[in-house]
Image 1 (cartoon, one colour):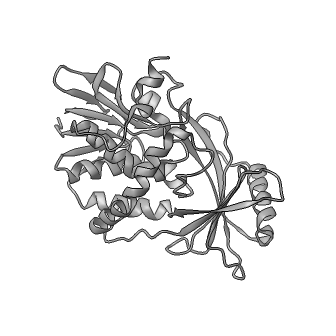
Image 2 (cartoon, rainbow, N blue to C red):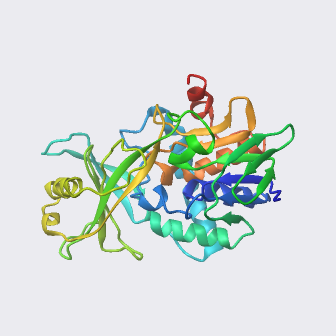
Image 3 (cartoon, rainbow, N blue to C red):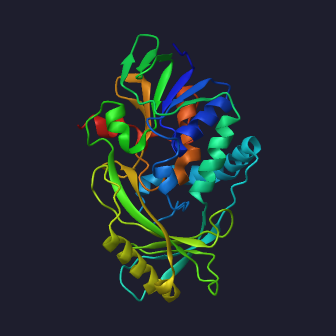
Length: 335
């Protein structure tokens, strides 16, 4: 039997960021991961801190703005624990609203990071604390008691004050919710080598393609090209035609990319809700069972604000922003 103050399901960017925030506030935390930590959407992401992406829902702006404000301290805290800096890769994005060339771009001050670099530093930071991360430990049942909540896994029962589901695309099954609560939305992506003659230090983004260069760190010299948006369930297979199409779209923006060698291809699953907004807060009628999921394309951006907001809700503090737009009740009461 384990008795942590809080139990989190999901050891991705969201879950581990929340674990660090709760630990920073003096709590004991256990994190249950059904597979391998940081191996799903966190690892697949492009890393744009796209708080002002025109495709974001308007109601996301307060949470996105809060997260941008928290990001320097968030990265500093991770570095202090891990001794691994996570630098910003880019500081400018050129955004086009049109899908067909010629594109008209406007300049936005928007940073990007390398999510794989962040994932390594974040997990190292967590390992430097007493936070207990259990790999290959799926949640089987979540049982509300009068003064606690019990989580059953294949090997143990955990009794805690609150359970927070941060399992992303797997939230509907983890929390035994209707399957449409959070659904996976597949994105195929590729990385190409940036030609040595090309000085690329900005992100380019249109409604059809984004190009995100890696400037420093272990992945320096590559550019991330993405991404498809597909409703394929939990299928993460790679299709050459989709990859070739993304490569062609990138070459229309940067002709040098036409002959750039492909270094890697992969697919990730974005956790999507019906209105494009995350689910942050307690389940209706179950104040000890919270969700921190449904971040869709903005999990990397929203991790610091999600961690702070959920911690404030758990500790009955005044939230930094009004959480009403993100409450699970807005979706679950209609299902």
